[in-house]
Image 1 (cartoon, rainbow, N blue to C red):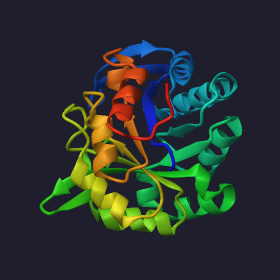
Image 2: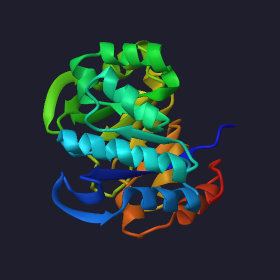
Image 3: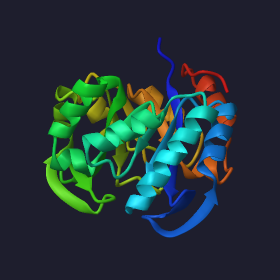
Length: 252
């Protein structure tokens, strides 16, 4: 049985890890390379960096961070945020990222998924989906969860898979930041719609939220940010909670 993965997510702005609410009231938490190395040593299975800097300077800063991380961190890491072209994908992979995530640009130009998968492989191509419940469906949201595209999230997940995505990073806009647990109904629906691995994101407030999503859906990984960054809980506490609930994880 493949072990479930626990993944810390680092939001990076102008070279620093930041945390806020809906990108407002951001405060600096530390150096991304140092934090990634610390999480790696603590037992994280992967690391995800999200570049929330909108400027070209931010993009170059991110490439430098990726290059330094590649020499200091020995677990796979994914980089997303602001990836708009195949050149962006190429630049980040060349700098040392294992996978590259794409979100709004893939919605705008789905061919980007196909091109990335054909050129670099499905294993490098991650499609991030921000989804919000609208009536009895979920819609794909872009621009940090603020713009409703009207696209059915389940249909978009299927298209992303068909175009060659190797993994989906699924964030529930409804539960993000609420800390009451993952959106189990959304996660289950997307996992059932595709065959590729899905990372659940949005809503973690307690270690037990991880075994809950793993035991109630067939999701491959769970992602969290603030509970780790603010030292609320350790990687070991999260993994011990999973083990106690019968979830197969790599021990911290």
